[in-house]
Image (cartoon, rainbow, N blue to C red; front, side, top):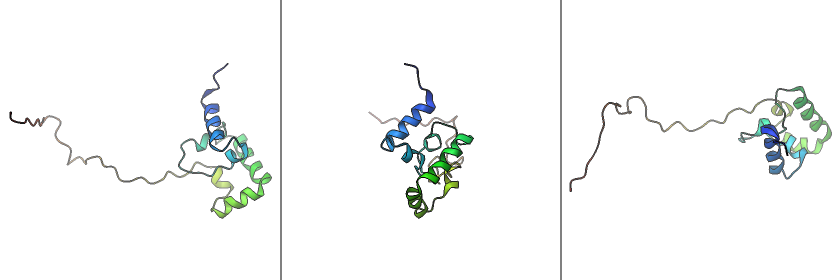
Length: 110
């Protein structure tokens, strides 16, 4: 069996996540899932992607009505989701970092 490649592996995972429903995969709302832009197995920038989204919005008005209640529209599905803000880094600042030339070794007395 030929290796299906990364796109199809992601598509398969997204189908699995949505209960093996292609419709649910297409209408999966943008969220924090890093696979979301790749869920259809085609690039988000391709005309085929746009056609699939437009067809889903046309053919499934009841599902689309639920998405609208959540504040989503077709354009939300045609662009990459905004990155979610993260907590400030816990990494030490430049002032807090010890000089790499200084080695602090604490030995316990015997």
